[in-house]
Image 1: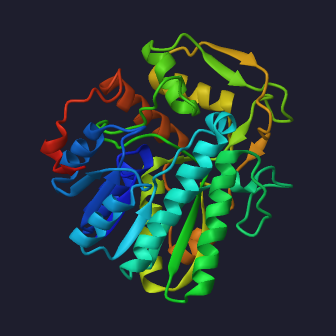
Image 2: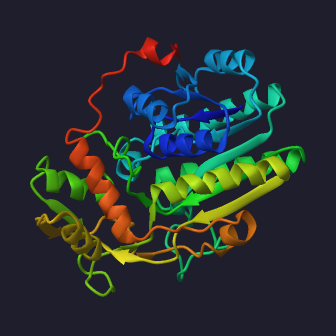
Amino acid sequence: MLLITGGAGYIGNHACIELLNTGYELVVIDNFSNSKVEALTRVQEITGKKFKVYNASLLNSDILEKVFSENHIDGVMHFAGLKSVGESVKLPLDYYHNNITGTISLCMTMQKYGVKKLVFSSSATVYGVPEWVPIQEDFPLRATNPYGRTKQMTEEILADLCQSDEDWSIAALRYFNPIGSHPSGRIGEDPNGIPNNLIPYITQVAIGRIDELKVLGHDYPTQDGTGVRDYIHIEDLAKGHVKAIEKVISTNGFHTYNLGTGRGYSVLEIVNVFEKISGKKIKYSLIDRRPGDIAVCYADPSKANRELNWVAEKGIEEMCSDAWRWQLNNPNGYEEVSEPMAMGINS
């Protein structure tokens, strides 16, 4: 059985689907600070499989004890964490406390119960401003904001843990830019407030929830002046987690992997693709870049291809099409309909 922290979130719930369909039994812990119970209801609907859910933060050591004492946990997939770069600059203490202390609390409980298999949700933000692209796993780590530093510091803690005890096996997955949604259109990205990520921003403009897209930066040294990023379909990313847990279960030590496509697209390229897919004109305005943002960022995913036997398969058109299907089917995102007790949620 696998424990999934943050399993109701955008990446977590897509990973739950892939893991359940692969045959894993799951238990989920989430405090629903930036996610909805309804997302997990729909995971059960899509897979036809049920699982136990605990409503709690990883900072609650009593609930963590309860989770591990009540379930036979073999490994952990750790998605839980605050995740907004901009918010992290305003609230650094919240980010360091939640993301780092929460992970330490989790690992201490895992160690107590002899559970030493972990897949950690990291980020390409750990690389900061790379000297060149594509980015490889052995590049220097120099995150430029508190969110990225929480990921970098957590990786260092986990590497030290593996160094201290050879029974630990940990994979840190450095995500690039996940977009899209499950092809059913039943689960997808549903951020609170104005989206921080490009695709939900575009889809909410297309559906009429937001007036226009603010394009951050138009003077980068790129083909159209806008930033270039490596966008990966959320399903491909989720499948990478299945491959990672297989690796973690069969080996020991600390491993890092880029999960990306190896191809970059500019903001305006994405806008153009989305307009063709949706038939909607996306109104946008060009504004100043954010401090610390970089011009071009895309992965070298060859290590994951080689060691995990994983490759991103879906193209940008499918990413945009699936994201638009989710937004059309859910114009206001998840409108909470699930009662906590109907999900078997424990508090």
